[in-house]
Length: 71
Image (tube, rainbow, N blue to C red; front, side):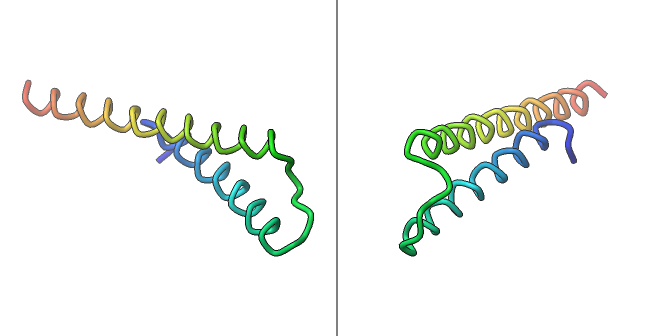
């Protein structure tokens, strides 16, 4: 599961959950644990990890299809 982009997708999920929790806490009127810049960096990290994970999965699928065609 952690191969072929799985680790990046799990990292993206963790970053997004932290980001979402921070936004939900701020929306409830409590002081958020991340400021504006760290919050933006968390969302940026989640986006980058998601793209890396999707590209890794796509490359693995392309390689798998290439192996099936060659056999």
